[in-house]
Image (cartoon, rainbow, N blue to C red):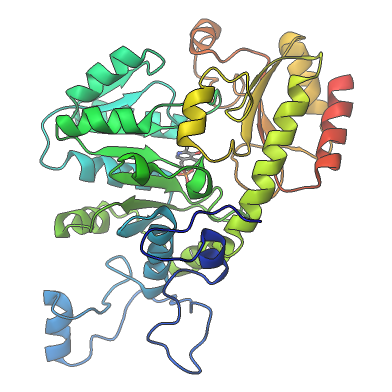
Length: 401
Ligand SMILES: *Cc1c(COP(=O)(O)O)cnc(C)c1O
C-alpha cells in the first residue's frame, strides 16, 4: 500500500496523483488531445493579432510569448510539484541552486534583517550564500543549529530563514514548526529545502513553511539524467515574485521539465522502494561490528527520534555511517563496492556512495571537519531501488575487505 497522504481539498492520494501526472490533468485538451504533456520545445510563441498580443503582455489573458517568461510544459511541471507539496503555485528553475537563489531573493524582498541559515546546509547552497554575502553584500547569518537556543534567537530577528532538514550528510533534524512560529513573529518567511526528505516523507507546509525548494535533479526526476529545481509557495505568487524568477534567468527548457514530469509519474512507487531500502540498510549497518555509528533519522538511536516521529513519515533513503577502521577502512570500502556506485548526488534509482571528507567537505581542514562532525571514515550512502538482498550482499563483501 502507498502511504501518500490524501491532500486537503482533494480526496485522491499522492500515489494516484503522481500516476496521472497531477490532480487536474483532464483539462482543456478535451477528446483526442494527447494524454501526456506535449514538449513545447520552442523559444518563441506566435503572438497573434496586435489585440491578442496586447492582452498577453498586459496580463489580461493567459498566453505565451517567450519561454523564459512562461512555457506550457514547464508550467505543467509547476502545477504538479505545487500539487504534490500542497502549495498554491510553483516556479521551475534550471537547477536546485537556481531555486535556492530565487527563493532567497523572493524571501528577502522588502525585508531588512539578515538571511538566517545553518552551518550544515547543502554545500552548493552555502557557496551560493557566500557569493551573495561577499559580492552582493546580502546580510547572511550562519548559525550552528545543533544549538537550538542560538538557532531560535537568530530566527527571531531574521529577514528570512533558509533551512534544510534532514541535513546532509549527518541527517540532523530542525524543528520546522518551532522555527516557523519564531520567524513569523518577526515577519520572516521560512524557506525549507525539502530535497532530501521529499513531499512523500515530509510536508513542510503543514508545519508553517512559506516556501519549499527542491533540487529536481534528485528524487523528483529520479533517474539521474538532468539538472533542475523548483520553488513552491504556500500562497499564490505575487507579480514581483514572478518577475524575480523571470529576470534572475535560471529558467528551464521544456525538454528538461518534461523529463521531471515523466519521472514524477513513478515518484510514489520509487519512494516506497527508496524508504524500504534506506531503512533496511540503516538497520543492517547498525548491527555490524565494522560500523561505529549510523546516522539515519528512521532508527531508534537517532538523537532526535521524537522530532522525527512528529515531522517525518519515513526515514528516507539517504544515510551516513562511520567505520571503526578509520579512513583506511573507508577508502578500502569504497574501492571494494561492486554494485553500489562511487558517485555524488542522490535520489536516482541506483545506490550511490561517497566519502564526504574527500568530496563535499574536502575544502575544510581535518580539524574543522571533525568539529562539524564529518569524520574521515564517514561514508554517505544514497539507497536506490535495487533488490535489498543485492545491496546487502555488496555492502557485506565491501566491509569484509
Ligand atoms: C543537490 C542539492 C541542491 C542543489 O541542486 P542542483 O540541482 O545540484 O543545483 C540543493 N539542496 C540539496 C539538499 C541538494 O541535495
